[in-house]
Length: 303
Image (cartoon, rainbow, N blue to C red; front, side):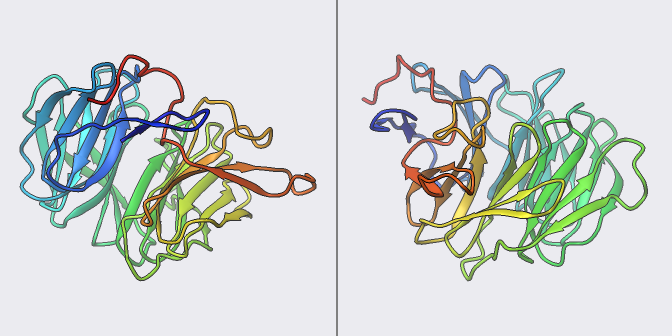
């Protein structure tokens, strides 16, 4: 479903085609195409001008939990599935260019800034780093005590954010010549909850803050450098499955620059405008909106 992120936040379009739950979304580099990963074992690409599905990507044999898109060089999609494989896709063709075989279901994937490495997490609790050309394991980053649900590369490409079912978020040094101990910091305060969903997290545009959904219906935000808990934003009545910062859009309030957006199991999508602690207007404002950009898609109307 598509919403405008301004005014009355009207729901103005629906993209139909998947036969199972949609578990991840990614924008193309030019923001004209939306990619989706689904429990129906398929990826799909969508034209956001016409609202039509461009292509369905087939090959996985189980639920697809996560996907990412390359930031530089040749545009590639990567996907992680319960079938234990990482798919590598050219968005122009429906079949995967290649697969990386692993021993466990994959619940989170990310691709490095340079596009030469893939990060994967699964039910074995470890973050694995793969050489995308050799399809070889480079090294593993250990520390989580339960299934990893999110992996996100920082805006500067030097750190990796992870969250796991052990209810901790962690950051990792992913520079090429980093020390052998790559763990940087552990962040507490975002409980998984009884539903045990695949909770997602994100970085803000400057890499100064990280946000993660939580099983107690809150969005939790920390300072990435200090590890300090900055905000714990209430409002949802169920597990918050995904928390995203607006990438370039104007903030709802004047501080900080990028507000977090969240999506909950209680079927509400919210935006939180954050205020300075001494701001007389209070702490948060909430309104319904879509996960990403406010402009574009102007020609698409629901049928």
